[in-house]
Length: 382
Ligand SMILES: *Cc1c(COP(=O)(O)O)cnc(C)c1O
Image (cartoon, rainbow, N blue to C red; front, top):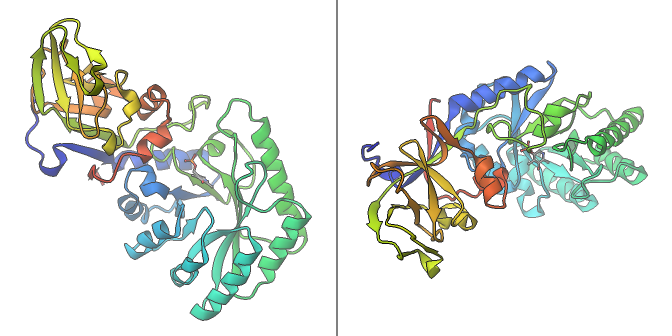
C-alpha cells in the first residue's frame, strides 16, 4: 500500500503499542501472588522501547512498585523527567553519583564494603539516608556478596551503618530460562536460606526479590515481594525453551520504514558493497532507507526478510550503514513509498524480534536494545 507522507517517521520509526504493554503487565499480574509487585525493568531505554514514555504510563499502575535501571544516568534521567515511583540501579554505581542519587531517593545495588563507607559519607553531606538493595551472588558469579559468613558480615555492616537504610535483598538467575530448572532452583534455595539466616539474626529486610521474567513464569517459590520483569513486559520471550502457555504476551514494538526506490535490474547485475549477490534473472529491487547504523544487524545481509504489501521480501547483498536492498520480484505492485515492516505485522504475516534475533546470530533482547537513537519512537494508544 502507498502510505501517506509521515514526516520524520517516514524513513524509519519504532511504534510502541502502549495498550499491548498494559495487556502484558496485567497478564503478568494474573500469574503472580497477590502481594507481589512488579519492578519494571527499563534499563537500556526500556530495551529500546523508550523508558520515559513507558514509565509515565506505569506511574498509574498499582501493580508496578517501581523501575529498574542499569546506570546512575538512566535513573537520574527518569527522576528528572518527573517519575515519582521508586527507581533502582541494578549494577555497580561509582561514588561520583552517590549524592545525586540520595537526593533523588534512587536505590542502589550494593555489595562492596567501600561503597558502604562512601554512602555513609555522602548521606551525611546530603542530610538523608541512602536506600540500598544488597546484591547476593547465588550462582551467576556476576555481582553480589556470597551467601555465606562473609555475606552475613557484610549485611550486618550495612544494617548498622549510619545513613544507610537496607530496603532490599536480591539475587539474579543465570539459568531460569532453560527447560531444566535444577540450577535455578538451587539458586532459589541458597537465596532463601541466606534470607532466613539474616532474619534469624534480626535483619528482616523488607523487600526480597529474585525473579526476572523467566523466573516469574516458571518458578513457584515464596521470595516474591517484587519481580524484576523486563522482556515479558515488552511482549518478548525470555527464551525458546520456556513454556509460555500460561501467559498471553503481545509484542509491544513494531519497526517500520518506507521504500525509497524501486527498479528492475537485468540478470548478471551485482547488488550492494562487494557485489556479493548477483541477480540470476531480471530482478525487481526495492531500496529501504534503514541500515546497521539504525541497529538493523549487518549479519542479516542475504538472510533477513521484510514485509511489503503483506508479503516477504528477502534482503539481497550487504546491509549498508543506512540503506539496504530487497528482492520484490514476486511482489509485482511494490512501489516507492510502500510501507516496509522490519519487525511487526502486515496483513496475515509477521516478523518477530525472535525471528530476526535467531537469523542474525544474536537474540531478541539484543536486537531491540540495539535499535539506535536516530530511529524515532512513536507511542500509540496510550
Ligand atoms: C536485566 C535484568 C532483569 C530483567 O530480566 P528479563 O529477563 O528482561 O526479565 C532482572 N534483574 C536483573 C538483575 C537484570 O539485570
